[in-house]
Length: 138
Length: 109
Image 1 (tube, one colour):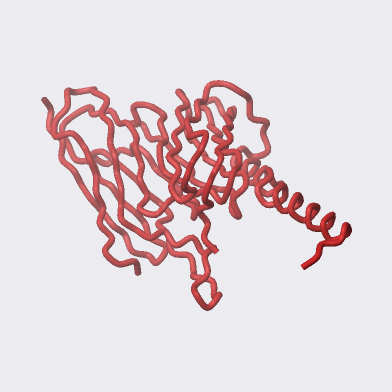
Image 2 (image 1 turned 180 degrees about the vertical axis):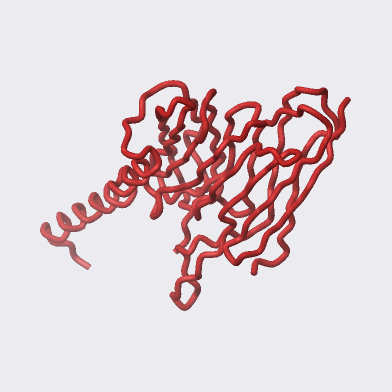
């Protein structure tokens, strides 16, 4: 098969678009965060998100978030087909506001943790996780 | 109905009054996300655990709302205060309506 100059250019553009589009921060993910915060702006600080920089297998990525004084913590995967991951609500007997679990990531993307504080304000933290093998099948 | 759903929970046997303990919980469950397709290209319907709760003597410790992005065999780690001797109750709610429960007693040291 012989590549003409036009074919090569088209292929290069297609590859570049495919690399950028699926796992970028989507509007749907920001909408999911707004649904949790009720549209309020989330501040910085007061929440610590721990996630690996590189995850070999997107099927099981250990993620934990700590937010002292939080009522609830929600996790979001910005590049997943459905950005919601989990919402943790803490009861009176929770010693620390620690949320730790294992999540699926479709590809390299930002993981965001948003905490609702006792006074009704919101804080968020974000970390990029590089994923070698995506975890959403199909 | 998911097969062979087995809850597993690790709680210390005893603790001092007011002490903070770490609880780890896991339940074997496929957590079918609804995104995958079978070999004929048909989507496999979603079947996950959508809610997990932990309570101590009736008082809530933590409640989690799960989405399909939680891995197979959902695992949670969290910390609780033990004010008195009693029982931790763990409950998992399946999409198909099944409810799985596990309880652990803890004594005062």
